[in-house]
Image (cartoon, rainbow, N blue to C red; front, side, top):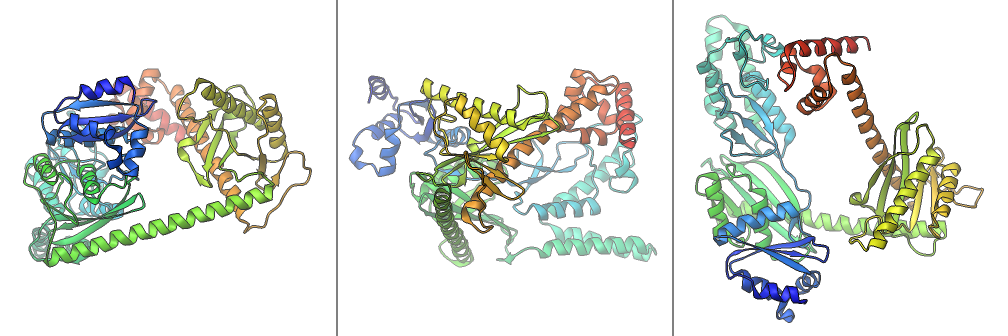
Length: 618
């Protein structure tokens, strides 16, 4: 421990708050909370014999720390969750895939609400329904609602005088409030029915449909009666998708069970609405410190239910979470009603908890088995590759390079990295070719390798940690044939790169070329080394062509808008920022174009005509 740390420990306040542990590079590696910062932070550096192995490993990497003082332990709990989400420290419990499922949002804060998909729930006055783990089912619900209870689809909050309705109004998909074809009171009645349906109050909706069907039949409007009949049947079909009927009480709650082993954990959630299981989902968490289940459950609850008002009245858990009372208080304040965290002991909820726990355990078991099997297969493939290529040692880091372009335009290079036979996407890099104006794959590869090697040497000389380019490959793979291999070998010789094993893999016959050998190496189709090389080469090709397509699309979009009448740099930027792509700009109406900042009706009409004439003429 250095003098700076000793002084910081001596000056720690005896207040609640959060602490942020940092490594020698200033990177935050752990975030924690404490009722008493002085006692909690000092405990990391005193009595190391009382720590487990994981905590000792964390302490070895601590070079500095910061603290944030708050008013209460409850505030510390909230701040800790926010800091972990922001910094995602290595030694904290993290949701591996960071899933966020969509919600349906009814914009009741607007005079004429509409229904749309939202990624996050916000406290903005609108109503959110979900989350929906089954996105396909959510889309089906949206389609049904648009057919039965059509609401406006346009994004406009208000309409200028004399505004004309869009195509949706003419085909019956919108009641056209913009033209005053429906009163606000009648429109809000439709919104109320949509709200009831999404809240699960389908009995009233079905009753209304049946009444309308009988009325239409009595008035001899048989087509309308048939339409109401079909709508009622579709609503019943959506209802039939409910998976389990648990009680007649119509309760809303979630059931959470957690399985934990080998630094991995699975959180399994069942969503119960109006007494029925309507969905389920699982989440993987990393647990590098082998934290107890109580801490894992707390972290999951904080991260998953951080949205606020969509927290159900009760959350059943398979073990009491750490700081459960504080969490319940936090959720109650966020949702505006009491929220209870309960460990069920008997009855239906206990039986359902056993089912959820069993699901979590099976998912974790299958994941760990597949992970072990995958690691064994990757190790076998690497050893096979070492023997085939005659390498002195098994290649731990393999880098593959590819070039992508169309007749020399938007030429890019890609570098993909595989560590121990598995892709490492965080180490992938893209290169925009800077020194060439024509089509020359050999020279492009030379430029990419030169830039990569120079960057690696700079990192090593500067002592920068952690190393990125500073870790050089154990094996270089080039997508191409003899020519590509020869050009790269000459470039590495100029760079004095040293003895680096290098091969190229040609697509047509899957031939492997080695430096100094005139004959190529061909492996059987089912050979593990061949399949590994193909996977690496295909990943480099995918990564390169994705970047090339993005640059080409961007240049084409800018080129077309550059040629459009009355569209300058600022208007072009505003159009792309508003609509996101040329396709969306083409689909916009004159009115929508004119609403873009910096545009007017004259410029919008000219752009609309230009884009559609260009499309018709190919």
